[in-house]
Amino acid sequence: MNAYVFPGQGAQFSGMGLDLYENSPLAQELFEKANDILGFSITDIMFEGSDEDLKQTKVTQPAIFLHSVILAKTLGESFKPNMVAGHSLGEFSALVAAGALTFEDGLKLVSQRAQAMQKACELQPSTMAAVLGLNDDIVENVCENIEGVVVAANYNCPGQLVISGEIEAVNKACEALKEEGAKRALVLPVGGAFHSPMMEPAREELAAAIENTTFSKPNCPIYQNVTASAVTDENEIKANLISQLTAPVRWTQSVQQMIADGATHFTEVGPGKVLQGLVKKINREAETSSATFETNA
Image (cartoon, rainbow, N blue to C red; front, top):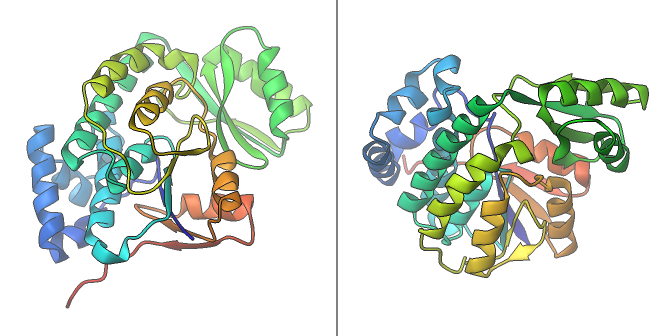
């Protein structure tokens, strides 16, 4: 069975999507529509911008979303997933690719999400840190015993967990985790504490937008970050999407469940190969590949 997976923030690169724009009339049409919806030329920044330009909050998330969704749409008949999942932001790409959200609504929500997260980051300084080489339960226990807000945020693969919260609490947790035997506990260069209680203002803002958006039944099950299980009910999809900003990304558990449910091949749709690497670390037997757009030339 084919599982299609969609990457999250951090996968962006200068020149992303240009090959699609130049070789597919459908891609060109969708990129131009995106410029209109966003009110600025995101294509200029994606195709020619610097790494710094691409790091702007209003750009990063929509750029990755656009690359993933437009690539999926150009695959045409060859895009036949039995199941989909996306890492954090990638969940929005997965929902559009699976027909649960329209392209336009998905882009609007992603843009609102990026801006709401930026505002939440500015309200209170916060951060995230990658912890390598420890069991999840040890990381969880250490976080629970640290004063202040620090929680497990991204379960990326066995032995790789990202924690998130207040700067002081994250720093204290990193020291405690090193004492517990972590190979590394490294503060990440991110704007704030994503997937933690610090994102509550963003969650509230995005909740209103999600509630006012029409969702359809997806063409195949989506394994959502919050539950790591197959979901097809529109109301459940909405509720999980609203919870996603303050809840952990259960990527390890999602991939394990997809494999348990019959997934044998994982195709990464979008920039980079991060998810393929994580899937291999979760299960070495799983086959992985990148979705590639075939030109008709």
